[in-house]
Each structure stands twice: as C-alpha cells, then as structure tokens.
Length: 452
Image (cartoon, rainbow, N blue to C red; front, side, top):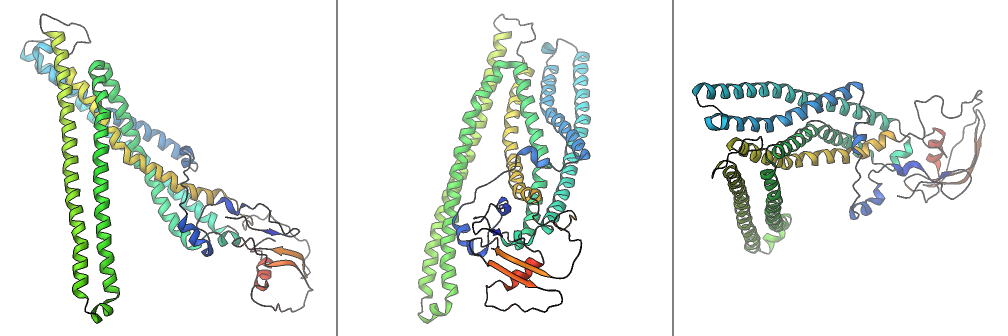
C-alpha cells in the first residue's frame, strides 16, 4: 500500500503512519488482495500478555505451577504402579509373609491417595487460574481495541474497512482467549508430563529408556505417512463432490434451458458419472483409514513387544543364571513397567500437546493486527486537550492558503492543489464546482476530519 500524501508545501508525499496497520484495503484494491497471498504475522509470545496486570501475573504464576505439578502426577502414578507389582512379589519386595505384602500395598495405596488429593488441587489451580486470567485479559484487549478504533482519525478509516473491524475483534478475542487460557495451560501440563516421564525413565532404567526413545521416531514416521495418505484420499473425495456439485448447480441454475432442450437425462447421467468418482474416492479413503489404523496398531504392539522383551532380558541378566543383583540399579518387574510406561507416557504427551500449540500460535497470529491497532496512536487525538493549536481569540474568519491534500485511500490523486480561500466573519459563501473539485473535502478539513 502506497503511503498517503497530505501536505501543504510540496507535491511529493511524505512518509505517513497509515501504513503501519495491516488491514483489508479499499475497494479499488480488492482484486490485488484476492490474488496476493497475505503474509502471516505473529506476535512474539511474551507480548501476548502485554496488557496483564499484577493480578493476572499472579494467576498465571499459580496456574503455571499447578499445570507443572498436575503434569508430574501421571508419571508418578506409573512409579507407584511399579511398586504395586513388586509388592505382589514377596521375593522382589524383600518379604515373605502376608503382613509384608499388606504393608507394601497399604503404603502404595496411601501414596496413590496423596497423589489424588494433590492432583485435584493442581488441576483446579491450572484450569481456574489460566481460564480466569485469559478471560480478564481478553476483556481488557476488547475494550482497548474498541477505544483505539473510536479515537482513530477519519483518514484511518479510508484505508481500513470499517465493516470488518467489529467481526475482527470478536473472532480475534475468541482466538486470543482460547490460546492464552486453557490451551496454553494444557501445553504446560503436557510438557511437564513429557519431561518428568523421560526423567523418571532414565533414572529408573536408562538402558531400557534409551531403547524406547530410539524407536519413537519410527512410530512418528509411521503416523506421518498414515496421516498423509488419509489427507490425500480426503482431498480427492472433496474434489469429486465439488465436481458433482458444479454439475448440479449448472443444471439447476439453468433449469428452464434444460427443460427446453429436454436435456434432463443428460444432466442426470453427467451427475451420476461425477458421483462415481466420489464413490471411488470414498473407497480409497476407507482403504487409507484402515491401512493407517493397522499401521498405528502394528507400531503400538511392536513397541510393547520390544519394550517388554528388552525388560525381560535385563531382568534375566540381573537375577538368573546364578546372578544375584543387590544394587539399586537392578531390574525387576516393577522397574521395567515403570520405565516402559513412563517413557511411553512422555511420548504420548508430546502428540497431545500439538493441537494446543497450534491454538497458541493462532492466538499470536490473531493478536498481531489487534495489537497493532491498539498501539498505533491516532494522528488526531480527540480526547487529548493538549494536542493541536488552541486559539486565544476567535473572530470567525477562515483563511485557507495554498492547501494541497490527497485522501489516504488515493494518495496519488491531489483533491486540493494549491487551494486558497478567504471567508470573513459573517459572510455566507457557497462552494460551487464539479464532482471531485474538493467542495466536501474543504468542509472535512474545516471539521478536522483530516489534517492537510
């Protein structure tokens, strides 16, 4: 967008801050907007919380701690599951009687109860604090955005479509509130689960944990290939239905012509042929879905098989064939289960956080234009009494001397070219001229809708 030209001395247009806000262009530029792919701008993550007050910061801090603690709960639950398995094995737990087994199980049950209580508090703090602060900040952003729009000079609306401003604040505020609230708290939760799961797995049995980590890229690759096949099949189905819909629209929009030439059977056959393509596409999609489900299931059970097989090898190494492992690094059934499911849980948490990360990115993208409008100062500030020149005495005379002016939406066209006019107090003057000669422009300048 070319900067607008508003000056009083030179025909060349100076730099102008109208171009600092990225919004839809005027009607005459609509074709260029439709044919040019806009560049996606995103707000830096920390600036997303630029309008947070002290209460919001405290809520975010408490919510972050709650999300991190809640994320650690599930890996710790896996640790206690391993303890339960060892408690059911008297040899592994070091005891031999019923009392020892009950004592071990009671201890694990008590620890699970404690985890449950902590989980309730942590999950509540995570969801409540982040949802509350997101609602507060989104409301504040909406208020500032509306205030910024109302106080903008009239020239700003010449290059920004007023009809889209209201819908933009509604859509953007929903995306911002979603991305900086529950979705962001889920990202913190799943990140904590991933880190704690991997740490517990490496601490409890680094050998088995590294084996598990090494096979995850193959699982991810299988998932990517499966999703790609489904996407291709889905796109083919959409295209086939679009072609069939085009045939139906063509015949229905020209139904009189179709009846006049008795071409009903022709269009019915043509539509049926187009639907045949969608049928084939549907079969291909079903095949892709079945194949993808099978691949994912194969990867899952192969992971289980490899993990438990390697765990059995480590247990046999430490406890069979005359070997008696007495250190803290010895493998047993509980340790294998703990390492396997902790690492697996961490990997699953990564995939669960992906949609939430996308929501956070969408919030940053939605906030970019909104924050640009809020931060851009109005060239004519109606609420600032200190801005502009205040006349100590007003006689009612109007002096217009050599004014040049171009509207921001058409900066290359001078509406006023060296315009001069003197109107004395008490005079009644009529401005007469053809369309585009600047009659209404002079009135707008006198009302200070624009500054020349």
